[in-house]
Image (tube, one colour):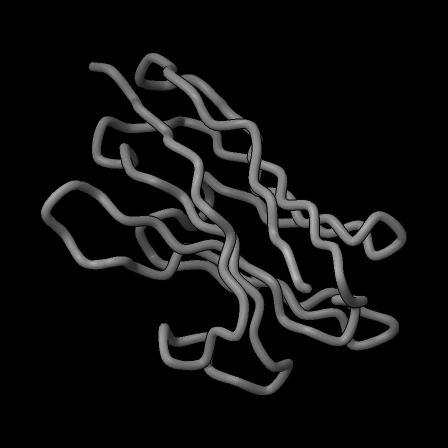
Amino acid sequence: QVQLVESGGGLVQAGGSLRLSCAASGRTFSTYAMGWFRQAPGKEREYVARIRWSGTTNFKYYADSVKDRFTISRDNAKNTVYLQMNSLKPEDTAVYYCAGGPFYSGFRLIDIDYWGQGTQVTVSS
């Protein structure tokens, strides 16, 4: 049984930082693309960032809305992916979901094979 378990969400003031973690179990995710989506109340789930490990290099991709503020990373030995979120804004408030999908996929919603249960991030103004 594959499981993705997120942690690290919480309440933070605008301009603050949080670090989300996603621990994967049930299979080795080193050959998978791993990433994050988020869903704000009344809005559709949206892509945030993803990371792919080629065997020698981590390829990282970000949504324009979080570029230069968020950093994604992974520790394959721990089967864990992280999302460091800096300079947080109230519009970053959402439930953040860890996701896993095929290496060469576009990492769209329909490409995702595995989802975490989500962790709430609330940014106050």
